Length: 221
Image (cartoon, rainbow, N blue to C red; front, side, top):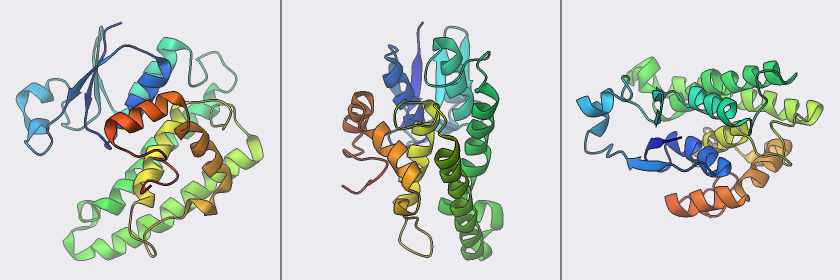
């Protein structure tokens, strides 16, 4: 399998990089010069027509969208998440797409509130996004506490743990109240993310990308 990940450190492509490293899949990194306008180039748009990262080139053609790439990796390897015949598959898919469609998109609204609301309404948009993120992280906390899913667990690495970990990293890095979040409010999620960031694969990626030794639970360390 020949894989090339179009990557910029501490962007969504880092989520995919964690998964590739955990799976020990040989791959090439193609660093994307975002500031230099690479995302709008015709060459990059042939890989990802929407001009975002990540993009993953495979033997069967390029892929984009974080959740799609993660799901493809699970299905290709049989690791880091339930396979198609696993009884847990439905729940896993539900929470993977919840993370992509609800949590990830709302996190972006915290950083780019002018996109959905316009420049005049950025404070209101960011406040609304903060409330939504708190509620949605609360749902994930309850899931871990009450159901202990194997695919989102301190004991088993998974694509969903890495996905949520990067989103939480970004959110913790925001200024304190009224917009930042405190991971101490979500102790079960904290345990999952602490276990993921301590794995050898995660430590290798964190060191390479300059994310620090505790990229999910204490990004500033």
